[in-house]
Image (tube, rainbow, N blue to C red; front, side, top):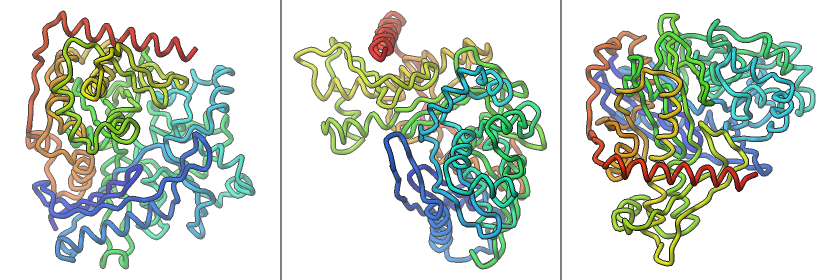
Length: 496
């Protein structure tokens, strides 16, 4: 058995990818599912969609590869993080829809806890900010707002989990209630230094600790699938949240190594080794991965709008029909115009964490058109990434000489990656295999199952497809980034 089946359960779709022993893609399948927006700022998923698309895409990938599971040694799982589910332990039936990581319904609750000074406790134990983004207050909301749920939870009848926990529960027929350290670290309930659930935080939020799953390493025994699902029982041997799985897939195993994933948003993770670094610049301290009982920590910065700014050009302004049209437009932009777009459509992420900001554009002239808008949109991703890297450098000195490893849809744009290299004044490396998130989950599972190489050998296999070196004059770089910082200050000022 030499193949690994990776489940990549994302925010808008689920994918299953079958890798061989060289981590080459053998077959894949993808299925989208419905997003639910019951109120402004609320985002939900039907838990049955998360499970049914997982089962369906796994079966489809297996079928494309010939229909046999005889070669599959293990399953690895990576998932959208922070999304929150609660279900009945006896029946497996959810008590409410999954509340998605983007959901902001607990904003006022979080403000109240901050006013009490509780954010300091949260940050000290979990490395996170006290924000609706994370699972803890979402779980508290379900307990407080769904009839009868609190009493059932206190009676030990209900289970809580992030998406990985829900998938494993269903894969194993309700036999296993587990998560891994990276997903636990994103719940706002897990003490990342002591490696256990925080009773202090659970008590404050009114969460019975009996609901919480067992926390394991990223490469561990997570049980076996039901034999009837795929024709035989398959071991589940790897789990990591999507951004941590991408960090593993990019082989960022040494302190100082850095990756940035450009999807709808952008997530940058910096490996800080065996020491959790406390940020003074509103970055998050988290677990990058945990192997053999030993956590490796990271600083993380989140940008809310990366690829979504290109979607806005297409769907909002309607100046492009397809994302690939953005680069040719940007290349034609007038160099004498200094148009700056701040894509704070849903607020500003790290290092600002300002939920009240909205998008703004500066420097328009009568001659500004689609070309300048396209260039400003792509440049905004580079500027926001530099904001994250500047904050990381201020927090931890080990970032000075590192290259930035990139993945995600926008990393395919040479123009965008060259500008990114120019504005951060550092090399940018794009790997040959862009399926880094799924590959990270596959390596974790394959490593545990004994069919894939150890960390050092895996890192040695990592190969560059494109390397971009900075080629912008220092005075131009300083002028352009200075304009961006003034635009940020004006945007924050306008929000009041």
